[in-house]
Length: 135
Image (cartoon, rainbow, N blue to C red; front, side):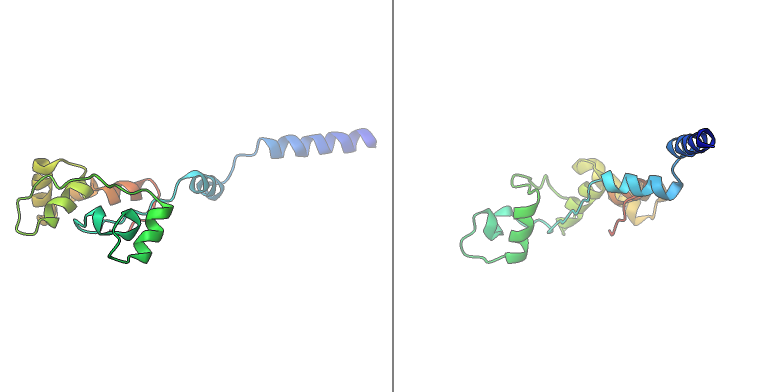
């Protein structure tokens, strides 16, 4: 009887050891190893306007907390623009990952609702990899 119990326990152990995880279990494991990314773009604001980055006059407590807990780009420069609102160029470069003149072409495609161009934006590519994105 003891041998049968041992064999049954061994069978149960082997079955559980080689059981493939469910789709939900695999997704949960992938999500637990994937970093959280919060990207805030303050529309051509210079780093010099943030208290935590050296401005002694302006108080920016919320941005200061984010600066102290994250990554900050202090030497990113606006390459140029093609529009009266310079933020159009900056936003197009960021969401498309293209340099200035390619971003201008991309922005034209965005305005035309070109689904291929839109599907290649940073937010859409992140969403394809399982991230929740809000753009």
